[in-house]
Image (cartoon, rainbow over all chains, first blue to last red; front, side, top):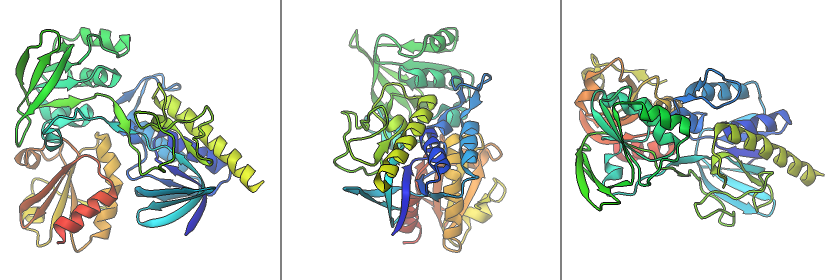
Length: 308
Length: 107
């Protein structure tokens, strides 16, 4: 069984920052990522709030830069697969990665989040057949057609702003009375003639067999229902943990996110968490990178004490 | 590396192929497609001779994606003897794609 000083799970901003710091500490480490480096950055069109990029930076450009930053370090082994077992027995951590068992003295979990679903019948079946979680990817398939976006946070509003440039009309559906998105985004949104805001409204059913053909909407104040005929629905109703198999004793919050202290230590010695998978309020690239560096520092301190 | 197919050679390389074909419909500006790219390239080597794994750029080839009603990318379609056997959307892990190839393409 191959042994590493540390294993980093996930190669989004948090995982890359953690790996970079560990590599520079001279650790022998492995990094497991089932897809290409970048994580959710790869689904983000433009990042306007990452310090040091006054003109903004495209998500995939930042993802490529993160990957390039790790290239010079030959003490990083890349595992291009999923973690399917994760066993903690005292100080020993054993993991199954792509059918091969490995062990590590410290593990940093930075597996991030994935888009939450509405939980309606037909939703899974219509994904890719009218339902999407990526306006940047799929907006062009609905050029000059009406579409709906559901959600009330920054993601929903950012994606609506992007779609409004391509499609004929966007119905932005949100279950609450007020949108949570940043005021800067909301004022941009309200200036657009082809966006209608449908607050206090929920989707109660999705219609269509081979393709999405329409939605039933319910007005929560009036209790009335209506049918909206369209072929495109973009869902941005928050995130859920993109957790690989995790040890059962690992402390997590009610949403399944991993609880840590300010040094990214979990309740299990030698197991750390960083980035969006962590139980916290501010999920941003800039906080993920900070978490990654902190977790690496804590892992290094832990390893020094172990070998002490 | 997975080879590219076009609207022009789709019929000969995919529909009339003697072995199963997995087509990855993608575009350069699509992040999840970029995430999936290395997985597709690795699998094309691992399944060489057993399953032909190819890519089609939807920007340069509008006709085939329209024919298969593709409304999201990345979408992967598995063809066997010219027939659609499986259609999947989104960046899947290597393990789950291998599962599908082993069960649906090689069985």
